Image (cartoon, rainbow, N blue to C red; front, top):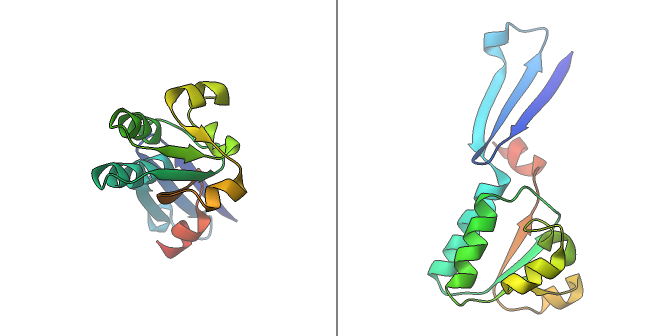
Length: 130
């Protein structure tokens, strides 16, 4: 039997590919940055470059990306987000808008300026590539 186990944390995602046909010490184990940490790095890079951010995707764990977005907004920079992506920062998107994030449709986001950042907790493509 094979099992893929993923522990999504604030800073890392810990991954185990368990195969009952192998000794446990020979199973694949990986520690990768969490999706929220990857998004935070992208937001911080945009902040450093003084560029707006355009957030799309789904509601993911906040933490590092929420803190990075707060810093981005405090720096006086623009942020755009689809309603679903905005829920990453608060379940009440009116509160997210009150923070200074412009809530827009996916179509409107396509023409928004800045760095497009996709929010999601699990990126199987990145895990496969690792």
